[in-house]
Image (cartoon, rainbow, N blue to C red):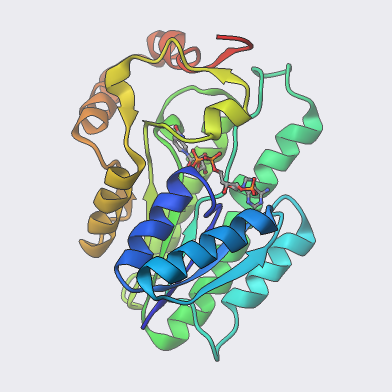
Amino acid sequence: MTTALITGSTAGIGSAFARRLAGDGHNLVLVARNTERLREQATELHDRHGIEAEVLTADLATDDGIAAVEKRLADRRNPVDLLVNNAGFGNKGQYLEVPMEDELTMLKVHCEAVLRLTSAATESMRERGRGGVVNVASVAAFVPRGTYGASKAWVVQFTQGAAKDLAGSGLRLMALCPGFVRTEFHERAGMGTSNIPKWMWLDADKLVAAALADLARGKTLSIPDPRYKALMGVVKVTPRALLSGVTSRTGRKYGPQ
Ligand SMILES: NC(=O)c1ccc[n+]([C@@H]2O[C@H](COP(=O)([O-])OP(=O)(O)OC[C@H]3O[C@@H](n4cnc5c(N)ncnc54)[C@H](OP(=O)(O)O)[C@@H]3O)[C@@H](O)[C@H]2O)c1
């Protein structure tokens, strides 16, 4: 039996990964800040699928939180075979409206934690000659979309670069770039979603199924939906000035909807 560690497992895309991987018979290490919610999730997945689910409470915006997860990933006696770096959030407001402290917290969770956890996991996986890492980025990585998009661009570049450097080691690393997914994300960030067209919304379970299929195929970048694949094709040939007029606003309506 293999073990997967998922950060941000208790809601949204992370909980869809947990459901799917438990259903496939993987043991899980569930990571988030809310211990009660983690325990409920672990019990539910254990009862439903008969798998072992460990709870690891950690705030990935802190050094102690990151170190606790690094330690678990480095445990050679109880190895992790698949790491899903999924925890993330959006800040309320556009550039210069967001306090610097919150901008730095985003870099800590989206970039530093992803770098450190990927490194802890892959060092151990490389010794065994197998293992996988999914780093959840966003299609925002490819368009002008504030500091959030910039942090996700880092995730894509880092993951594809690391995948190249580790080619031939038996490891698979993939950046996952979802479009809009109905989760707790937008409400937590205080973002209005009324200007997002219905067709742009993705289902988290379908997204995860497509992402895992892409990982199995050895892709290093997954944009798991034909609508967004087509959209990203258009993005590539659209002048950035024109693009930013639309992408910097869509789904970034703050305040009451
Ligand atoms: N939803 C979208 O439209 C969308 C689109 C593209 C990419 N994404 C990306 O997908 C990932 C998951 O987002 P989601 O939409 O599923 O969000 P979500 O529903 O808000 O879930 C976020 C999860 O991350 C955990 N988390 C947040 N901050 C954390 C921290 N500092 N330390 C540890 N855990 C933390 C939360 O649990 P606790 O609060 O208990 O810690 C929760 O389990 C993010 O990286 C996001 O940027 C989302």
